Image (cartoon, helix red, strand yellow):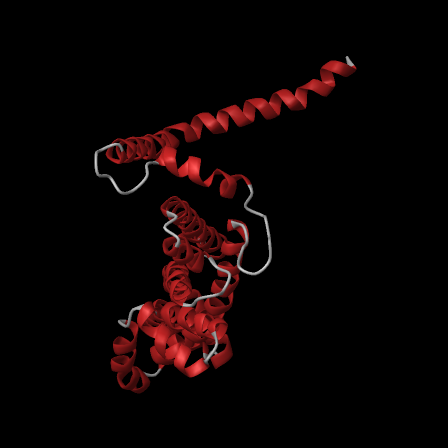
Length: 279
């Protein structure tokens, strides 16, 4: 009797896991098939005479040490891919944080104040079209150090979608909400927290989600140009200098995977914070 009682939870757990897997299987099969077909085509092209890029089999053979030992640390910039990505993520977190703070604050200010919007909109539209790589020389010239320059490149790249989407969200607050606020004679503080922020929140998260991808792209571009720092971007540039093409391809796979995870993380946070009717 005791043995049977103890085995029930395990059986229930197995059944629930299998049932969840069966539900998710239809969604998992298409991307798995697409990846498998892509790898097969890539491998076939790599076998053609004159092919310059290695196929997936060759990439794994050349980089299996990096894959199996991502946590090694021999000092300096000779570190495993985990530490390279971790260093880049730390820079992204700092630059993205300041971009979010200033972007949301300026976006709210511009959304509320029409005169400020008309004055600053041409300047913002001009600056937001500058590519991340173009900011690297000026940031290095102004800040004189790699680390703060990299943080500035992340900040200046990520701030625009946050700022613009926040401003649009504030401007798109329904007039009925504003009329209710006037009738109830809400204070500025109550209007800000009970009407403005909840109404603009979907737009703010749209900007934040776009910005996290741009921030990740920006740090890669900045680190490629900035020499002698630990980061996945410089890892790619160093591999290129030494003609380690397989290492470049492996790093690109890691970059794409991290970018996907960052986007999913932001989407998950958005689902937790936004009300169901605003998702």
